[in-house]
Length: 435
Image (cartoon, rainbow, N blue to C red; front, side):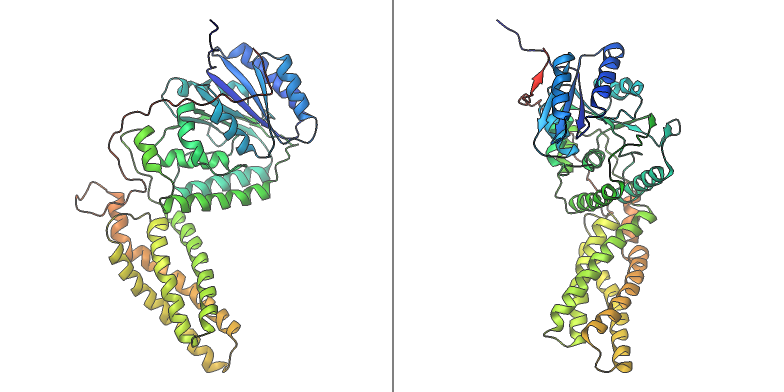
């Protein structure tokens, strides 16, 4: 009776798209290193995602020639899609992702996977921003990378230092739980995965790496940064609305005792408040224009401000200041007081406009009201921070100081749940797999 093959300990996935110039050299180098330096069982999976050059043929030839190398061909483009597809079906204990150009020194691979194989950590990432990391790259890429990671830490309340390094690993049972929740199929995929993992109480291990920039990289930095910012807004909104089931993931896999994410810093509050303010101002303008068709200017202004004020207070309560639990009605009442001040500012500006420019057009009225609303937004931030949510933020900073204080963790503490049973996943059909 034939025995089923034993799954490898490591599955090193290399997503590729139109990499015919360097694919063969990179895979041969990776194969030689794994053969000589990694004692655990492994396989290399070349995940070709919709290449239009000779990459698919090269991948098949490498799979036929090198033992332990397999090639998977996906019809749609996307690094995130390739990783999600291969990782979801892999039987390996630890799933690894490496950039095809191998910019990261491979000597960091054993310490990357060691804490996952031992069960000490859930995910592991290489960081180019550690004190002992050695990095060679241009000033432009360095500035963009550091700025992006700083913005990510300040706005998403996460602690990992380098979300974009193409050198990561995850335990299979963790991947099985998190991957269905990750929506991005491109370059934001692993950043989204890390945000969800940390916010769910999973342990992320970081190792400093030696990294040399590939000057021939085809990554569009500006477009990638723009898509990453959109992804941060989407994920942040999903967490704020409770759409992403972080509590259930923590109950299954989270490390205990659970420490809630840190309250947003002042800088993070400013960025989040600005995002909420921009959306509120845009919504205010659209509502005002719609109501102005049937209502007088002052009435339309009052109704527009009232509608957006309620939504603004709710969004700032959850997203900007991280407040949960009781007190929502009181905060909305205080928010209406703040709204009254904003209304006084905007209605006063409208009255001044009519006094100086009788018969002003609706567009001119909107321009003046928008400027006044921006000033009111600044006043609103000061009052929300120093008055409305001040007590709630203090309770969140010292959750055990008062048993009757309003709870405010971003992810509430949960009772200990039994470890999840291991799920069986169907094996991924590959074009070519060495025996």
